[in-house]
Image (cartoon, rainbow over all chains, first blue to last red):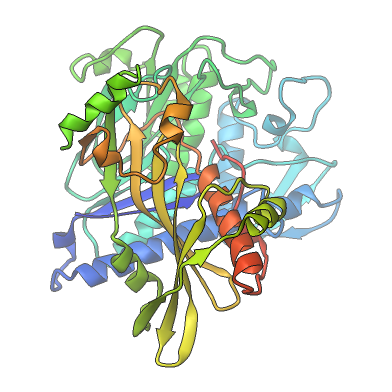
Amino acid sequence: MLRRCRPALGTFVEISVQISVLKGQEHSEEKVAAAIDSAFDVIEQVERLMSEYIHSSDVSRINNAVPGESISVHSWTFTVLQAAQRLFAESGGLFDIVACCYGADVSVKPSMSDLIINAGHVELKQPLRISLNGIAKGFAVDQGIATLQQFGLTSGIINAGGDIAVFGDTPYEIPIRSPNAAWKVSAIIELENASLATSACYSNIATAAHINCLTGAARSEIESVTVVAPTCMLADGLAKIALLSERGAPEVMQVFNAKAYRLLTGRSLTRQDCPLSLLF
Amino acid sequence: MALAAIGSGFALGVPSHEVFAIDYLTVEQAQRLAFKDATVFVPMPLALSEEQREAIEDVSDVEVEGETLHIWKAMNGDASLGYFITDAVIGKHLLIDYTVAVSPMAEVLRVEILTYRENYGGEVRNPDWLKSFVGKRAGDLFKIKKDIPHISGATLSSNHIAEGVRRILASLKIAAAIPVTTNDESAMQDKSNA
């Protein structure tokens, strides 16, 4: 197992690959290392495009633009914006990359419907900010996985601070942390050729990402929601929807072929119990 | 590993902790990854005077704890390829060893984690107690669990690494007279994406 870790996307990104999985080639550690390096490069490129803390990023350029201005964006940014738009529509506005920047204040504030997204170009209807923090990390993981596959690797796992994707024939058992005790494992989910992301309202952390954009209310219960989805980008975005929605938004999960698992306060789930927490 | 050393925790009235450590790379491996064409890595440890440490803190806005910066110059024959620096920062509770590779103009080429350590058995109640062990090997103090699985849940912030990189760049500029090119990338992002 070759395991590498770099700081990226505001967290620690870990890529692990079995050395013996290079398709039809000499099992060269050097080649696997090169694949991992490229995957990290791609993940860092996503960060440069979509971080709101990097001045030259597409997101920063959108945030500094004036209404009516045509802002050119990278095709990856366009892909993520399109997915965000779909999540916005399917969740009835619960997932909103614009409103999430404005916190609990629900009096007149911009929403994603004030953003015009065309292939390669974005335009604002009114001054606004966007944040892709609820979805770009998952997209970065997907791009990393695609890179590993392009190098001919047949199995591996990428973990970007808990946004996890695995590919290949090897299933991985992913422990899910207790929302309130960082290192207490409360559940284990087996993942095979799929992705998962966990979203939680930790008792001591209040972030805008976990505020209901429609009502301005933060979920006060201490719980976490883990979504298993075909891509990490979807798992990332859907985890926010499942956490914010009263019933976990089963209909939205269904649309994206995803499943949501919820951990409630005081519940400790073993693997056998895990399906009990399935939201639908 | 190193079970006997847990007693030092009890002696100070701190409960024992299960700690996990993941070793990703050795220093030599990280050097090779960062500078593939290097024929030699010349150690040039940099002792920081008190004045320099203060200046570094002013420039980077990060506290300087160590008195020496561990630098190697990556060379291919007579040509300088850049510099390789090893450092450690506190992650959530314990030290994380990492490396920074920079160009001759001190542009950040690569940041890589060598060893990641985290507290497994619960919160550390006395951070000062931990601080006193900065620079020591966790293996001397704790029961170490290896081969830690991939965990989903609370996102761990890499802010301290970003601060460490900022401190290293300031150190190179101030104490090693290496011109530092600042850009978004080398400054790294400094906020959590959680």
